[in-house]
Length: 254
Ligand code: NAI
View 1 (cartoon, rainbow, N blue to C red):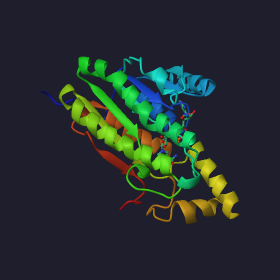
View 2 (cartoon, rainbow, N blue to C red):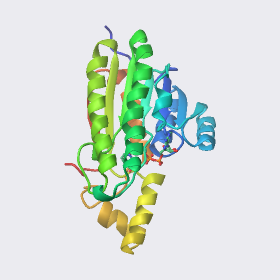
View 3 (cartoon, rainbow, N blue to C red):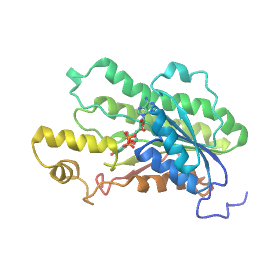
């Protein structure tokens, strides 16, 4: 078969669903895909923010609690591109971790991606095209103390992504992870503020002396930088890229 002619990754009206697309990395992805002329649906817990975000990019909004996984079992989703992005963080030692808080993170960040992939696959297989992009983390590949739920859910997402890649291969469906270091979003702004309070140091010191100690490039990742990779992975040009995990961490894991 012929190679696609576009090297810019135009998405030519393909449908995309971005979870947690109302803010942060998800919104940046939704925006980048819309700019590449995809039809974007934003799924988010925050209904008002989802609607506002959707109207900014000319997309649609789906207000949904993705941690309510029982409700996702009967779904069928017609989409060409699925970006599993919605996520939360909780920091606590294992011996003090509330089991229900742990399960919530696993439902939202591992079980929901499984159920959404499951719901999207039949249509993708029928059309012989699919792009699944899982927003994992550097914590999908390595650990940090006090983040047992997040680290284990993201490690699980890495495995799910690879199995999806194997099963999708003969149907034109790719599945990949993006593994950012700290990205400048609400989730991280909150962590910075919490750490500053805890250690009684200025927020700039938290970023430089706690968060970025292992990063070669001493700044946070911008959401748009993650989004540009997601847009490329969504494109026809990335058809041979599957089962991969792309770190974007300023050299943290080098
Ligand atoms: P964010 O907090 O800015 O955005 C997360 C979005 O998910 C919000 O719009 C929120 O309403 C939505 N959401 C939360 N719970 C939900 C639920 N139950 N159902 C539906 N939507 C829900 O977070 P950010 O930073 O943009 O993170 C997005 C993803 O990127 C997460 O999976 C996170 O683990 C990952 N990530 C973030 C990094 C960072 O430094 N910010 C680094 C590496 C990965």
